[in-house]
Amino acid sequence: MANNLVISEVNSLAVSGNFDLSKMIKPLQKELFLLDTYIAGTMYIEDKSIFEDLKDGERLTLKREPKNRFDKKAILVLDNQKRKLGYVPEKDNAVFSRLMDGGKMLFCKVNGKEYTGLKMHVDIGIYLEDF
Image 1 (cartoon, helix red, strand yellow):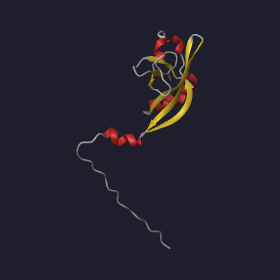
Image 2 (tube, rainbow, N blue to C red; image 1 turned 60 degrees about the vertical axis):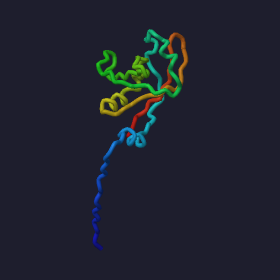
Image 3 (cartoon, rainbow, N blue to C red; image 1 turned 180 degrees about the vertical axis):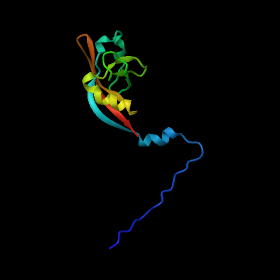
Image 4 (cartoon, one colour; image 1 turned 90 degrees about the vertical axis):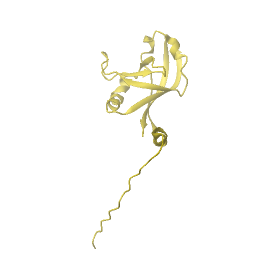
């Protein structure tokens, strides 16, 4: 019995006219949950009022800070106005910093917040934006 090799041709897709690429990609976009953690270093934020506006489920920006003198794997957490809220805890940032350095887009969402002593405790979930 002989094995038959079947080769099929794949046609390319051509799009013409006016279209919004972001609308075409959006249905493919996925949020992959990675880890629940918290924002570290909130006690060093002078203006604590920036935490008052945070809402559960709000998406926050994560930004690598490889020249941080305390931690070369540092990842900043920023609000929607690009104000510093703190950092992903050092105990959690090794893998996430490598993903971000490799071009992966990570973000976080607020899971809850409460004052504990002199600092604001903000729980977050970290996500990978996948296409």
